[in-house]
Length: 245
Image (cartoon, rainbow, N blue to C red; front, top):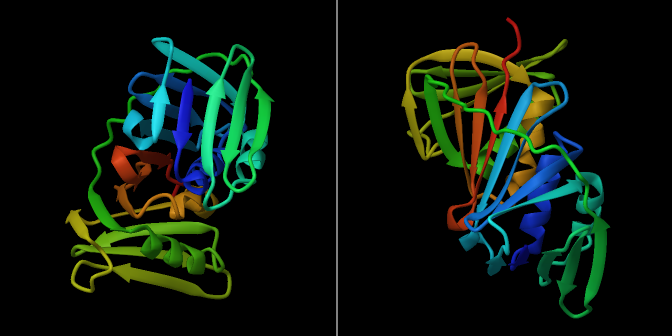
């Protein structure tokens, strides 16, 4: 695989988001683009990152499918070295992934590829009761405040409003978003309520700079899906299982 990424910082954030959940992974490169998916070790969260060929400035794969096994901590450490104006180039050979930064100073790194078992992407056919689309900044700023108060995030929809709340030992907090107030871009569905681990939901917000908008879909006692929308058809889906009431 050979790929050029104009926004090196956004790509670094994507890898950081995956690293929040799984330590190593096969990135699957096909002619259509690059895909990353996996389940965390506790089997609470599933993630699927899809970067179509059009997401990259240049992209090519010599085989029908190439599995690129990487230790995400090592890859993330290298990607954090990129600057805002750097062009990121990725290239794989039989045993190595080479990371080049081209800017005022050209830097080159190489990491060994891992031999990992090829996983199977599960089907996620949930029927969600409620869906809310918003600017990613609205979701992240709300979660940043709520995460300081409690470790369990309660999601609720009521009369078209999207409600996020936590109940701490000493205090409670609630955020209400709606299309009427302008804090939601879209909202549809029926009333529902479920609770989730705050840490897992917060782990998805590493995509706050890479994705301008996010859709949050949930129902009563089913996983929540956070669908982060990135440029040129790229997206990241995160499913977090509900906590027992």
